[in-house]
Length: 337
Ligand code: NAD
Ligand code: UDP
Image 1 (tube, helix red, strand yellow):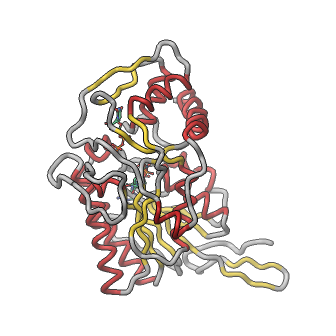
Image 2 (cartoon, protein in one colour):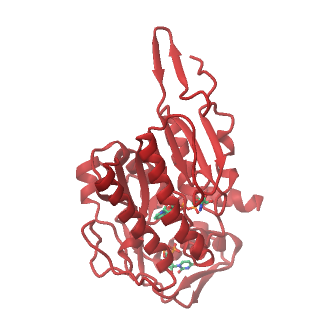
């Protein structure tokens, strides 16, 4: 079974097997060189899709997708989606994952964060409309802000400070959801909205500032693990393979409202730091308390009843297993750094 050369000029790739001709589905993934985007590229290629990756490498790296360039069904465009997005050929789905995602990144790049959530989303909605494609947008638990309802259900409208330092990310994502719903209601666009809770795994940037890569790198180097505040704030960490499975199912489900995808296993940040200290076992590493950043949410846990019922999905990989896999990646990454 040999695929014909794949090209945006000649249209969709065709797989020919003895008597059957099968036109492959084509998906555009923005943020493809990032942590989650690169895992989505892997998954859609495994499922037999033609995958078009797009990224401006603001926070991503070609290293995350270098293994895909030998794949005939993969194309990559180095492009900033806040600029007009053009793509020739048919398109079945768009997965919009481009955006700085770590608090440190979006505090450093507030305008780019606002632009990719607003202008970038507008361009991709326009492209989806033009191609009659289904679009899935990557929203976030941050739309719930510092939540007053716990755990967070999709019906909760959130508690966000629009002018605080995190507002650039939270409001960009809330605008993204509003704009996507408007395209659905006004143009009949086929949409999906995933609200992603803290996700971790291989290919996170070691210095992206998020708690989990920061603690792993600090423990491996024998430094202080920088726990902000007293570490009693909570988060619920989902392994990336579980997230990707949930996203894949949501894309193929018949549901146009937001769906939480995350792991409800909630722990304090201090507990996470201690688990990582124990796992790494470096006697030189220790807990180093630092000031709590402004507007840092005090609690976060997804209510995943909707995903369970709608997608027959729930996370399968416990933190004990996910941390071991992620640590193996960081050990190697740090060895090369
Ligand atoms: P990441 O920083 O690893 O990936 C984001 C990618 O988007 C990077 O490769 C970056 O270069 C690219 N990008 C940024 N601006 C762009 C632009 N203007 N044009 C093209 N590409 C651009 O982050 P991630 O953790 O993989 O997050 C991916 C998506 O998932 C984001 O939209 C984020 O908001 C969402 N999300 C992630 C988490 C999480 O825990 N990782 C939680 C909630 C939501
Ligand atoms: N955090 C921490 N030390 C760090 C980085 C983060 O204690 O070096 C805390 C942060 O204040 C927050 C939690 O860990 O309470 C998760 O932070 P992260 O940046 O991973 O993601 P968030 O859930 O805040 O978007």
